[in-house]
Length: 201
Image (cartoon, rainbow, N blue to C red):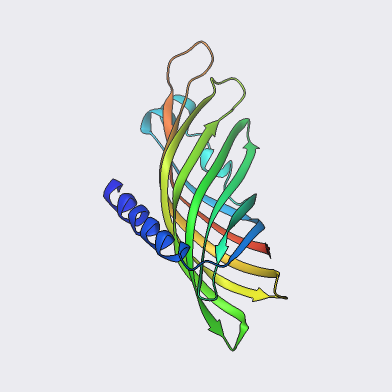
């Protein structure tokens, strides 16, 4: 897992560096989507807390993000910050992503409509903030792929729809107040369907 993450991160850095020399448009953007997470619990956590439904806390929840980067006619690279949090049956989790991405464009019909696909690598912070438990957090690595379609409305504005899948190794622990560790949970993978708007300057 660690070798795969490192290889994807290295490939992303090379792609970003190659594109930087020919980038000609800066842009910022906003995204909104739905995150689906695969959270895996330790056997100890299931035994001590009665198999809590932690995989449902931030699964299928709305996620907002902001991004900034540069683009050419053929590709773009950008940094994104995303945040998703929610509570379920007394448990509360928060996921924050800080990601670097690289996409290549393929014109579809006209230059105003493009398919895109690329790679993403970065950091994921998983926080456990449940009432009655000691707060805990962990920062792990993430690496994945994304694809979608982008429509340019004019020279400065575009909208897009996309899908991204990432593998991560972020984990956190749960310990009731005044007691020892009950067990741990791992964020194994994270996927997102999203809509975005970008503004060039």
